Length: 244
Picture (cartoon, rainbow, N blue to C red):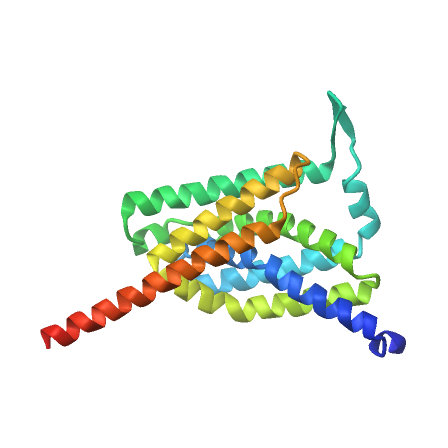
């Protein structure tokens, strides 16, 4: 253990993996925030906490089952020269669920126009937690496969995952508050989840889409949205000054 602490290569892999785990966890946090927003105000924080604790438990458990994870990528049936593995099925199901969930939320936003508390109360706490855990499984599988490809030591993988989840716990509340306060940003986040769902389904069909391309597109869209928010704020301030 001491040799790991003094090995620069280990620290480099730990830092690299931690950053990647945080980046890969962005879609998880966004889904957590949107799913929890359907709950009453007093239950949202608890739902996000349970969801992230569940994600941590799943990822650590999967890391300790690396040999089993490898078998998930091996085809168990072949249809017309197309090998289907359990990982493919998990990614396809998770991607389809994410697209369905995000599309449903987009439809609700377009139909209702604004978020109302009555809609939040209708969502059951257990149902939201089940949805969060379903997506946690998909995101955790993606996260663990990334970890195995970067780090050589299980201790490094576990440490990086724990640090990333702690960072997500700290960021979950501010992200949720910001998304709820800005409806256009929420629509952008939902569009982001649709893109992630499509990427997951593409991976399940053996068409790998680099997540970096998706994040680059979302960073660009986010920058444009930030400019729109700044413009709206300045126009509102100018209107107040003019009326005053």
